[in-house]
Image (tube, rainbow, N blue to C red):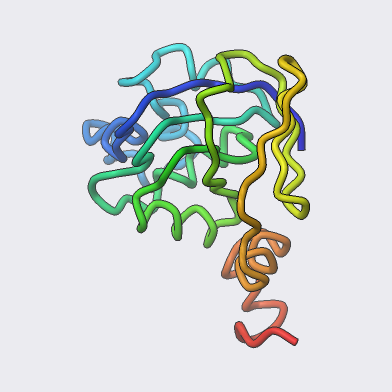
Amino acid sequence: MSGRAWKFGDNVSTDEITPGRCLHLRSNLQELAKHTLEDARKDFAPNVKSGDFVVAGKNFGMGSSREQAPLVIKLLGVRAILAESFARIFYRNSINIGLPAIVCKTQSIEEGDELELRLRDGIVSNLTRKIELEFPRMSPTMEAILNEGGLIAYVEKHGDLLLA
């Protein structure tokens, strides 16, 4: 996976990802996606490209449990979210819909840097700055869920979460 970095700070809430004033659109996710992160950055949703990355500081996805928050990010074509830490429910919601949420040091990633994510190797390469960042590999269960495109797709294919 490779793409451009969109940089955000600490404590980005689900209210910033999917603004409350737009939740009447939750039955029209394509329309809701057009408002993704607009309170944090008005230029994000109209300009993000398929394959890009959201890069943030600490506690990304804090606040209320809005399942739509990681979903609209994924609908915009974002390949993964890299952050110092995630709110627990946002992290699990991301994995469950097949959107990698990578816990890693993000201070050396700048806006617009070209990144390459090697999920299996636990490596983020910052191609712009010619540095590599390591991150802890995910559990085999979470990796299998991501490989199938999310929890529902995994269960539909395999029937349960028992891994060989």
